[in-house]
Image: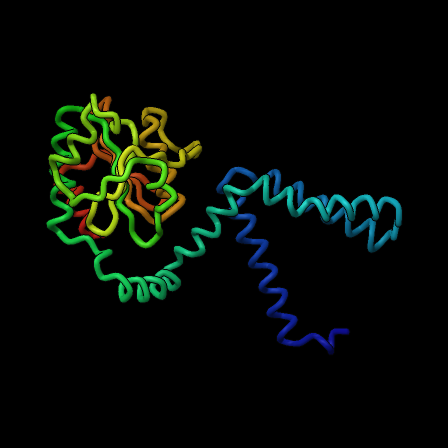
Length: 256
């Protein structure tokens, strides 16, 4: 038996070990490790009953659970699976390939300095008056489903327009603004809210919405707090808090 063990078998075992290791690490980070251990215990029991003891009746019952279990796992871990696939797509080497094609197809997707400054100045003025705002800047991930939830604007990026949209008496004040290809595409948009328990409690619903869109896409989400006037940015599921005008400009220039 050992003589038939080849390099392909070693690679097979190594890949299975890597899958189990990264699944274990991912489950631990998402606080679902106990569920993962329970699933492994069920699979071991099923294999022992069906393959070793060959109990036909109990094995048939467990077979039915296994058949339905795949769908149950997808439903139960749909958010975790989505985050895992997104993080896989965000891998540096994969992103380089995607960005190579994206940049060549659409050169206008790169936001220049003259488009960044109106955003920065509007955020500074709104922070000074404690006017809440949520601005989402689209990058390579399309946000058509997000813009469809709001009102179409399709205007050039303008400081006064941004401030007027988020003015407290404006009907679009509570929603998010989406900027795409150097234009304000829509306002009053609804974003997916993150349920991450690591978000500080003092951060409100705008921050959770910014975190949600940053976890679901590669967009850059800028938040101006209505309570404190502080400026924050959510990128790839991470917050940059208490940004000054210089910090915000440097961050947007680097990311966009």
